[in-house]
Length: 328
Image 1 (cartoon, helix red, strand yellow):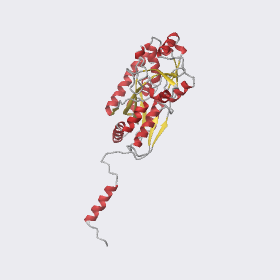
Image 2: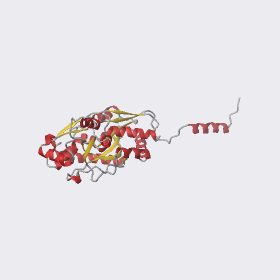
Image 3: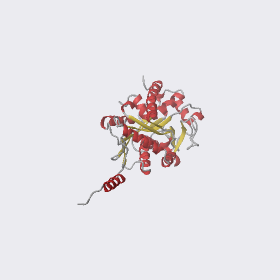
């Protein structure tokens, strides 16, 4: 028999450690495919969050497991959050796109669940909404639209990518309030995501799309749409030619955050992994390049800061919805 020496045992053990992927005690890493849920049809802001994040995570090697995107439209995020709470509790391999739109769904009680029922993860960027028309529209500037609404609020049809009382509708309501018209008398048609709303605008089915700039960036560059105004305090760094509503005498601003949440009951180790990974993602040159191309601002929040922010926002939106007449 071959003698097994202490030295040979050490060599074997050392070889095993060298060939294994070692992780600290209590650490967590993905062990299967990752799913991103976009709570709308392809082409809108939520879809962009998912597909851009997935692409950068894999391109940078931060995630080596496969990542796929599932579109789950309905109720401006209400369908997705109900599915996640009921069917995916504790799922560490699931991330869901979110924005102010789902906060409005919670505030107006379209969504049966709130941020207390899921795990807020991170804000990855922010951007601004605006009022978009076709390139051949009769509205050449924001003043033309305002004049039409003052003459007859029902003479203009707005088509947005979220449900009544949600984010895109609120942009329209804020315009109505700013010009002294009843927000509830302005015609708003909801679609299942920004992609559908943009298609309706381009097809001539609606007059104005109250979307976010990133959702129309491609059509804007192609000369197919005109942005009457953006709802920022000052002109955007990445689209400096777009006028703001404020500079045209209409006091409307509206910031849109883009972020992610996870299912309830996810182990703390998994939440920490994803928070650190997303934080690393937004710091990469690859993300910065994608962000600028989309037109997102580099405003981020993580962990407790993000959790506190979205829960505070929910309270503020309930007050705003009452002021606009959506809630009694």
